[in-house]
Amino acid sequence: DQQVKQNSPSLSVQEGRISILNCDYTNSMFDYFLWYKKYPAEGPTFLISISSIKDKNEDGRFTVFLNKSAKHLSLHIVPSQPGDSAVYFCAASYTGGGNKLTFGTGTQLKVEL
Amino acid sequence: SQTIHQWPATLVQPVGSPLSLECTVEGTSNPNLYWYRQAAGRGLQLLFYSVGIGQISSEVPQNLSASRPQDRQFILSSKKLLLSDSGFYLCAWSGGRTPFFGSGTQLSVL
Image (cartoon, rainbow over all chains, first blue to last red; front, side, top):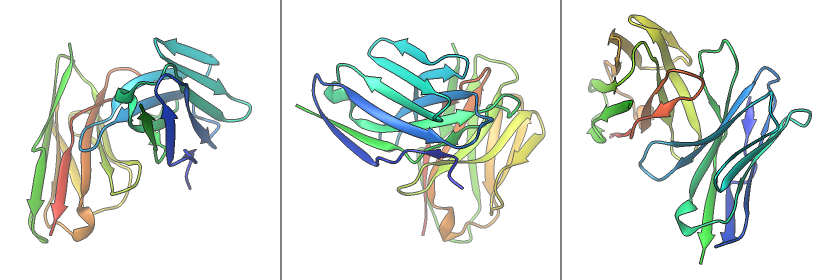
């Protein structure tokens, strides 16, 4: 049972344009959502998070949007840069769950020159 | 600032051999600690988590075990490795809602 889904295994975007990565979840108990960036053979790096009491959180070029009714969140990267090329993982946790994360399967982002 | 150390970075072990991966955290007290695994081409799966010394919860049945002998030390072990234990193992810690990950260990069981 995949409780967190990233349906696009890959995404290609031109440098300077917007990258939009999507994530869907099924567990209504999830109330904290995170995005991590991962390079091959390295640990995931935390990018940005959002609590379920908000619908938007912004940090520099990264913005996360949460639509609770649709159980959907998205990560926007503007402008995209070649160094953003990596695998992006969506993750979720719930209060009282020990901050245990349930991950999506990841989206490979490639930012082309 | 907090840092997390995980070693070794890569490990090649024969089937049936034992395993010990170690993770330590600096700059924080009483963190939650986690072991995750990423199998080839897949997402990250939680294996174990710990909220304190000697307190270990297993998330999936498997050939592995975990121990927390000290507040900031987390160890992943196996008595006899299987081929299916191959993967990328990640240790993580959290003091709040956001877990932070170590650099990972690539384990190849041959």
